[in-house]
Image (cartoon, rainbow, N blue to C red; front, side, top):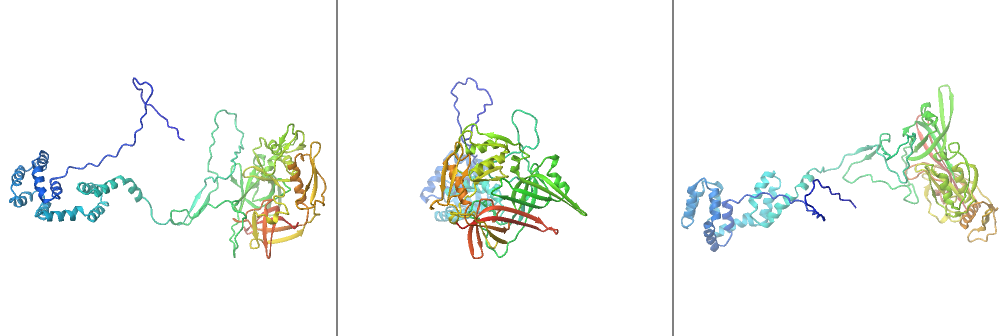
Length: 600
């Protein structure tokens, strides 16, 4: 709803309440002035009547004062003509002769009109029907008046106002739509030529926008004004291949809108590898030669190594002696990390600077975050314990497991950083930690998003085939198969046997003792993870590219594999991404996925 503000510009005299407000519409458009029709048009209009009534009309009209005045105004330069008109109209035999002699000198067009139309009633009717009463002729006449200049249109309109109603409507429509016609003339017709559209405007991303202040500010009060500039944004160019007014390159859906993500089968693939690095604080680009990124289900963050192009590039990641956050862009996909240390090696003619770091969630780990000891003094939800660790850090969390309440004094730890405490909570209930540096969100997910005994009937997140798989190797990773496990808490905990559905529960795994086992949901989730880790499995290593329809895999995803004559589903356990540049400048990007193929 939009508020209406009333502003009074002057003070009224003697005004008492209530005040009546009247809202009027738009002022009507001024009408086009139409001059008084001349004598010839009056005579022509009256001669369309029947023969018997023409004489009466003529006698009546010529005796009236209005017509006499009009004749006096039009022909005042020739008083003799006025007298002749009064005299001649009373005598019928002299009408034609007198009209030809008296009127031919004033208007040359009048002679032709009189010779054609004054000879008799039938000729008059035929002439009038042919010129003004027949619609196609009027239509043709109107068509010729749409193109000339406005002055000629107005003149032509004055001559047409005395005729059919259709003519009047056409004239009104022309004057009421002048703005639309002007706008139509400015439309450029024809296809656009191909061109590149380049811009450094910020491209909004989904999720929560987090503001990072890297420079300490002075204490101030009042409103804080934030100004965003596109000055340091990279320039991105998109090819517009031309065509009509419809955008030829519609926005593609995000990769998580279709399931499974399946790269198409082609005879050949055109790859344009990309490797870039930016400092997050000011978006300064850092020249790097190669990069490696790896993470697994058992890690709370990724490890990363980068070889910088020069000492100056390395120094950008440690400006002012402070470890800087960076953003890796590999084939269009972004990875956020924190530079923590560097190695230098040199020999005759060459120097090498290698930066070592971890995911940007390392801000919550040692040595960037202090360690502490903690014990929940009050009863809280399991997710609230994670929220306590992230308070004031700028990070948020997403809990994708079943929540439950934790009594007071159950959860405690000694000398741990926030991310280590969060990883302890996740592991206790059979979960894993995955950080998203782009949105600064920590995801708490089950270690087995799909259990081994249900993976065959699930829909994979990504489906890869042998056209995009460079290599595949497999080795056994089998453990004894269990179908039951005893899980129990400590002082305030519960105890239960978690059994796999549809089995006898006679193959019992080792007991699990965990303080957080205080709810049936906690027992079920931890017991499920223990049973899923058992059984016959294969550890499969896949080497694949990174492209539009084959994004970097994420630990915990279900990957469908089609290799030669086999099709099976696996769970992603680890992922390692490498981008290496050779001596001749050739860049090679690969992702090596470690997946688990389950048989039981």
